[in-house]
Length: 113
Length: 112
Image (cartoon, rainbow over all chains, first blue to last red; front, side):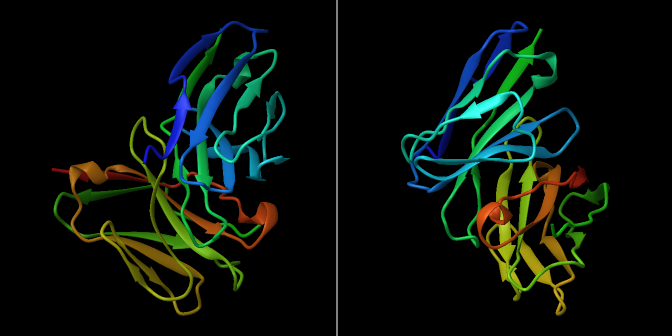
């Protein structure tokens, strides 16, 4: 099992550019999440999905969009990148059992200049 | 939202036990207690979770107070690889309340 795979690992964007962070999981998990982590801080939830076709906002959704067309994939879209979006982005997945743990990807380090 | 309180940092010596405390005085009856850790430059890693009873796995033990208002993550023999930020999180029931909300955690340093 690969678990949760994120691509790319690193990216530098110019202000105003757009990009998609990819996330895929092979555990057949219904729930998927996107978090961001600024230096020295905890993780903040951006968006989450409880299944294909269903997405909802988390704590810090502004400037981002998501889609969930399949169980496996949960891409995060940044439109009009801003320096405030410089962060490390983590994707995670979990089963519907709230007693189960999350599995996290290794992260995408994004710098907006 | 149910929240947790953890010390900002703790130190331990290698090969000694470590007890990481967490207070969650507003926990509800259906909240699970989850612990995650984050090694430097890595994504968070699930450690253990519990509801009411103490739990053990290959990584750690979780001791839950009888009134569930606090819990303790126990690393039986700390190694240098255990140096990380440890997060204690309550996972609530259903909908957005089932999402993990991270605080700042406890930064554990392990001295050789």
